[in-house]
Image 1: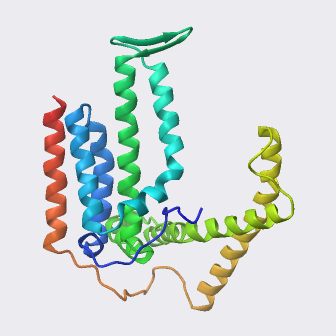
Image 2 (image 1 turned 180 degrees about the vertical axis):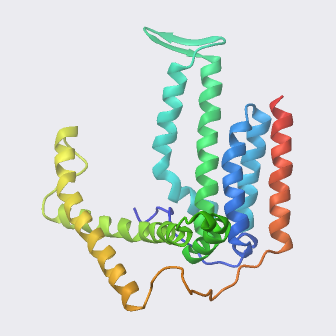
Image 3 (image 1 turned 90 degrees about the vertical axis):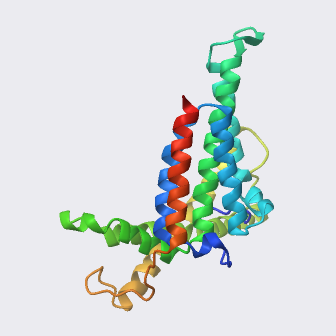
Length: 264
């Protein structure tokens, strides 16, 4: 569990770290949208190349990201298997009883697996290279026009930041509870599915109690420091849009056009 990178921030000096959080958020949302334009090997190769270039520019070790994303490989594998056996069309490659594997199903399974992987990599790279405070400021700045219709933009951005911030904390708390339960004789790895489910129940209760306790402590700390929402608040760090942020959006725009051309 300590290898999970979801919600973690790794402070480093790199090009991706120096980007404005607004440009990274816009790029991430745009990337998630344009991923669905890819429908052939060339377009998916372009997406994978962009992910590799982004990781290289962030100076984060590939092994570190791979180790942190191993937990999602099961979801990717399950998606691959489901599409492999339930997508028909094209040349029949394998047949055994009611199981049939077609060429179109194999290609579609590979493409969907690539799609999930690149989305997870880009979203994870955002949290690894952007601090929770920067994400909060970036979201609040991008959603600022919604204040005109009385939407609580600041509170929404703050909740998103707190959620990301407490993911590693809750994972660490879960690790401690698992070790404590294992020391008392609980077994989470052997037995039937029913017995494993029963073993997890004693884990959930203290985890929820700990989460509510941390939430109460955070609320009391914010209240003691005079937090009362967005009204009258100033920023310690001002967001500055630089040329590199514009270049990033231009690269995404060019890649969008390329994906549309490759699609047809």
